[in-house]
Length: 212
Image 1 (cartoon, rainbow, N blue to C red):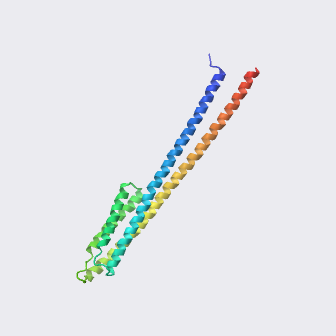
Image 2 (cartoon, one colour):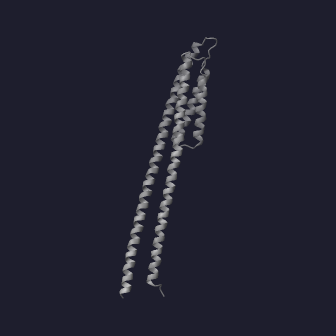
């Protein structure tokens, strides 16, 4: 013997309400996940931007120290080596954070450039009681300036790659967030319309039963 129609309708109505709550709960959970993901992107993007700025600043400082040496305002360009060491340490930290392939490639190029720059700086002659080996100085100074400029340009490319990565991830998350928002709205609207329709049908069914 089948179950009474009223009982079946009541159970289906309860099922629909439960479905509505589940859909809205999933929508809320999705919104929380998206919010946390966006926050994670921001937390990752800010250190990346700060690191690229730091690298550019240290490379410019190394170049400034080199030019001071070439202009005979200092006896040796050893201070520039400290700035290059700072760059290498920051790059190592950034590489440990598993950046995107584009950013990682630029970081590797910077390490390669700073290594060559350091070797040339170490070959530059030191002043000895006010005298310099001008032959060696002219031989290495041009290479040092060019290498320093190359590293500086690579740091600029790193900044651009970092900005592109930040922009891409931001756009991806914005697209996902908008899609999730509209999906939640559509699910909520469909569920609400279903509840209204079922309630209307249930009311008509009750009137039909009472009129018999």
